[in-house]
Image 1: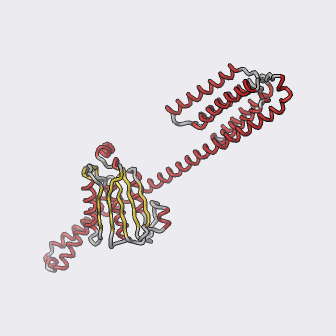
Image 2 (image 1 turned 45 degrees about the vertical axis):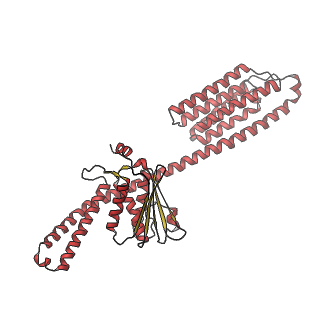
Image 3 (image 1 turned 180 degrees about the horizontal axis):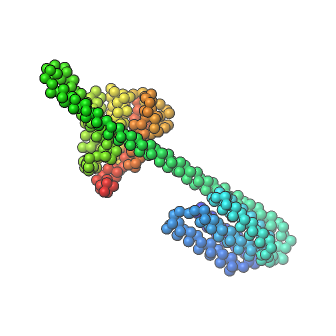
Length: 417
């Protein structure tokens, strides 16, 4: 509709120029008052169209068809007042038909073709003939040819300009719809994964409790306690069971099945230190260097999902480079930027090209590649993004960018409530 409004402004200016040239340049008398009324109607139509777009943004086929029909009516009125079908500018009807064929559904496009054909036929039957001055009577054919050339150039230029714009808009719309469909499919995939993880967590809770009870009974058996190695093994197994239960609790918490706990209010520095501490505790062999130059600390609402995705990135770096991992946290304007680097082999080109797609993994594991998939989608939900690159000196770098507005207490508490 905006393209049609711009085209209508061009039509108004073009008609004013044409009428001025014909009336004052060639000395051909025209019904200026009636033509000015048509121009004023086009201006009013443009103002009403702009107001409609401001208060009602959506425009369907019917609205576009009506707008094009008004343009056809205005062109028909001007042609009727200036020679009808003998006017070389009658070819401007083709512009309306072309726009209708591009913008509208088939039935609406055929309707516009029928309307313009009827108007063209009507102008061959009834119109107000032009009264040519005596000095132009002998040059009538030459003037008609000149008018045809001007009309052809005008139609060709307008078609190139507006059809390319409209085609670009349609391509952008198609690309946006495709991206939305892809995002919806990925979110549906995440929902299914969450349901499966939640169900698995519930199912695993019972056997883990059973094993924990059995180990507790073993710890009370004097014969087993008398053997130091066995007693230590039982204690290690108990610690492993507690670790598994903590992981399952985290899964249920991320799936929205926490035991009535409110989101934890903390600070960014405390959140990061807690995350790093827990990750180091679960990976005692890992060498993680963490550096924060964020600046002034801010209060945030801790998001378990965000904690999990950062841990996923660290886990991927640890698997690629167990010897050394580097992580930095900086503030870039109103964004939190986390960078994780490793000294591993880096990403293969296919993975960089399809970053965040499920089951894109270089580890050769069945069902692998879901870690970065979850990272990308969680960050996208929070308004951020993920980028990855290979470093020239070896290794890979993953950068997480997250708007602070998604974590700050004012924003987050409003979202939670």
